[in-house]
Every structure is written in structure tokens, then in C-alpha cells.
Length: 509
Image (cartoon, rainbow, N blue to C red; front, side):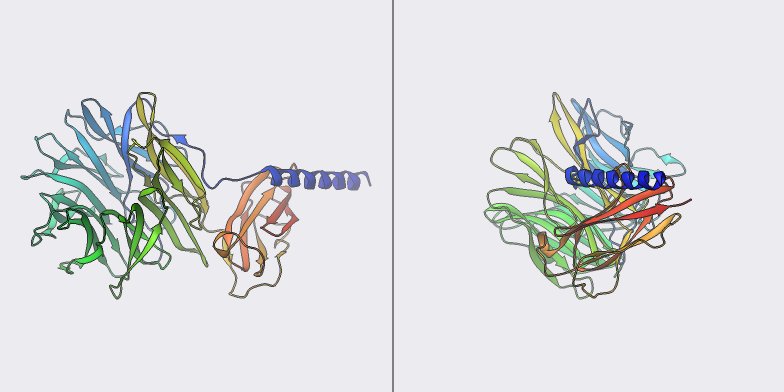
């Protein structure tokens, strides 16, 4: 009898603690700012170019981040390993006394969860020959970083290399050379060019700022670039290829003055060319979607903030990891009248987080990784730089995305909220929890219900967040893996905009 009373009191106390915990707990989509480097002037961070492969995407257990380190009057190119807990360790890829800038990196064609970086290539601009040339350095997981080598030191100035991994040690590269756009296929291990063409050889206008991606849906390369118009403003054009055949140039953006921002993948699972334009006054961000099968182009506004100038849009998108639930994380730089901010979004595209990085004199560039994978969680980093004392340091904000624990069951829409008892219960080490989200209730942004499903221990401490996102009406099932927890009684609670319910769960090992 005493044991029964004691358990009942513990249960009541635990339920009260859970209630208090949930009421005061507020999980922000993005972390607080985290410093990545210190004591130097570090700028222009870049993660590996994203390969948009088939219908899905692979993730790494860690990624490389490259950046400029300025030690007046010279600069060096550095690389840093980014994992769940990045250290202060930095590798210098260069050492001579020239000015170097605009590093770009690509690594393996990622497939699987997680995958390892076996091959990587870094390229950068260097002024060591009294002109701007492109140099590189190759990484292999067996032999490590090789020696720096000249990639293009021919006559004229070369700018802004961008590259993507094709497979193994083969890379595709675009860059500006004397006002033209050069495309190369390059074997980084043997340092040999296997294919070389001038994409704008017949164009008399000045072309610059190229970017590249590839789609395995059609095995096509996509290259976008800026082209100077008669009014001295820039348009954005695209060329596509199933090598060796290239399409004619097609217009991505013409009205106004436009800046090429590269590529992302949108909710239609099509590649989109992102660009900035002042066509309506302030600088806003647009996308031209490219249908990989028909070749059709469709333009839309991505960011339109009247009164602000917006630039440097970055996005990662996971289209099919979870049934019916597209995951994304996005960011951009917003320049106002008195400050420069980085705006960050959650899965739904709602920009609900920001960080101020300086006044309007600051030139800020952000980069976003593909995702660090562990235990079906994906860690997204947005890296930026800001001044601190006499230094310019690299900072990051990160967030977690749950990739694999939740799936939608069927297409029917329930008529009420419900939280089912987990099955099996008791369990060892995995169990499933099913819940219903109905329609017809006041919903959150984008017509979805904000759903939170968490697991707590007997003291009311949160031990796992299984769901924390906006969901469409439907029936869902989530898997809770208790292999890392001790045997005992736990509680799981479902909370939405309109509903809260808690149930008991027993883990027996």
C-alpha cells in the first residue's frame, strides 16, 4: 500500500514538474551565436557546394569550412573541420606572402547517412604573379592534404572559382577569365584538365560571377553567370549541358540590376537559380525555377522586404527524408538604415530568428553547410563574420532538424486531436507513438499546426524532442529510441496550438 501511495505521489509530482517545464521551456529554432575563430581577421567562409542528386541527398558526419585569414599585408587560405563540436584547430592551406581571396570548396558526391569526405578540392584567387591567378589544393582521406598547385596561371586575371564534385577525384569548375566564363572538368588527383571550354567566347559583353551545380535526375550541368547589359547593369543567364553538348544561353533575370546568388532546390524538387535584383527599388531576392525535363523557366519572389536591401540567400532542403514533410533551413543578409542583420528561417520558411552583425558599413557574407548527420538528426550551420575588438571573427548559429523519426500514415485527415499509447509498452529499445492532427482549428503560419512531442523523465526533465515543427493535418507516427536511456518510467507529451496530452511510457532493458 505504501509503495502504491509513493508511486502515486511521484506520478503527481512528475506531472506537475512536466507542466511547469513545458510552460517555461521555449526551444528556439536556432542556437545562440557561437564563436568559431578568435584573434585574427577571418572572412569569406565557404562550405562545400551542394550536389542535388536524384530525389534525395546524402549527409556527412563532418564537413570542411574554408575561409580567408588576413594578416596584413597578406592573407592565407585556411580550412577548418566542422562537426557537432568544432574545435579551434585550423589548417593553413597556403603560406607564401601574396594576397589570396575568394576560396571555394567541393567534396564528395554525398550519398548515404552519414557519408565520409574521401576527396575534396579547394580553389582560390592569388595575386602572387602580379595578376589574379587560381591555385588549388587537393584532399584525399588516405593521404590528407597535398601540396598547393597552379590551376590557371595563364595570361589575364581570373576570378571567383566555383566547383562541384562529379565523382571521386573528378570536379567540374567555373570561373571568370578576362570577362569570359570558363568551364573545366578536372582530375584533382593527377592535376589534369580533362575538358575545357569558354562558355561565352562568342559574347562580346563582359561576363562574371559564375556558379555551377549538377542534377542526377538528368545528368545535366547548370551554369549561371552575370552579363553586362547596354545600360551597364547586369543580367543573369544560364547554360545547360549533357556534355559535350551545351544549350544556348537562356535568360534567368534581365530587368533591373541583378546579382547571381547560385543555386538551391525548391519545394517542387526542381533546381532554382537564385538572384538579387533592384527592379522594384530595393534589392530583393528572386528565384527562377528550372524544370530539368522540359527546360521551362518560372520566376518567383523569394524575399521581398520593403525598406530593406536583401542579399546572399542560402538554403538547404531535404525533400524526401520524411513522408510528406519537407525540411528546410534558410538565411539571408538584410541591410537596413542603421544595421546589417542575418535573418534565419525554420522548416516552414518563416524567418523567425535573426542576429545583428554590424552597422550599414559592414560587408557580410554567409555560408550554410549541407548538414552534419548523427542519430537521424541533422545539424545545420550558418557561418558569418563580424567585427569584435580589433578582429573579424567567424561566428555561427546552428539548429537541429529531425530527419527520420516521423512519418505520415496515409492521406486521410482526422476529425479530432488524439495521442495514442505507445506500442509496444513496456519496450526495449524502440517504441512507436502515433498522433492525429485534425483540420478546422486555428493554425500557425502557412496553414500548419505547430506540433511538439517530447519525452520527460520522472523529475520532469526533458530527455528527447521527437517532433518540433509545423505539420499539416494528418495521422503521424514517430519512433522513440531509448537505447541510450536507463530503464524506468518516462512520460511523453504532445502539445499543439490547440491541444495538450501526456501519457506514461515504460522502458525495460
